[in-house]
Length: 178
Image 1 (cartoon, helix red, strand yellow):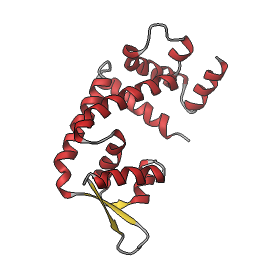
Image 2 (cartoon, rainbow, N blue to C red; image 1 turned 90 degrees about the vertical axis):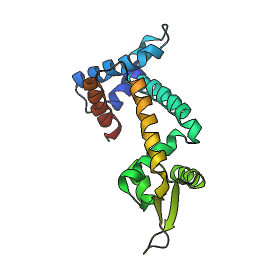
Image 3 (spheres, one colour; image 1 turned 180 degrees about the vertical axis):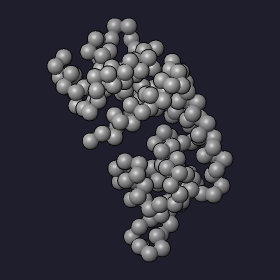
Image 4 (cartoon, rainbow, N blue to C red; image 1 turned 45 degrees about the vertical axis):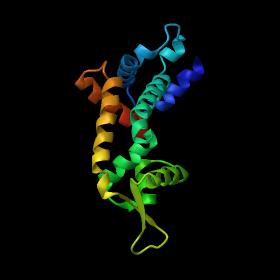
């Protein structure tokens, strides 16, 4: 439909036609095993729809993998972010991870209750909270890396290593363009 074509144009603005076609083809390879045979053609041809389907599958599989650890997919980004950035203020983590402040508060509350993250007052700004991973969480964080990698490998199994790298590069452009 004209509406779905307009959406595609907006979400891939700045992509060449070749980039759009390649992104669609790579997404289709990943999503196709889970698509119903009677999927309407406009959805089959939609980059946005395929991204949504793949995201839903990855989220579902990651949630199942993390459940025994009493973690959720939303926790992974914060934990990995803190592992990479080190102690940062909650507002810095919110900006770096591109999430809303209320979402960050909720996730950090949950991680703090689970003993993975600790909030400490900033040394010079009493209004700011600095987020720290607890020192004894390295084994759990390593386990989460393995689980997240396993889920990613499972979902992206239809792609070669080179195709995975290309999809990642295209998706980084897709989600970071203005």
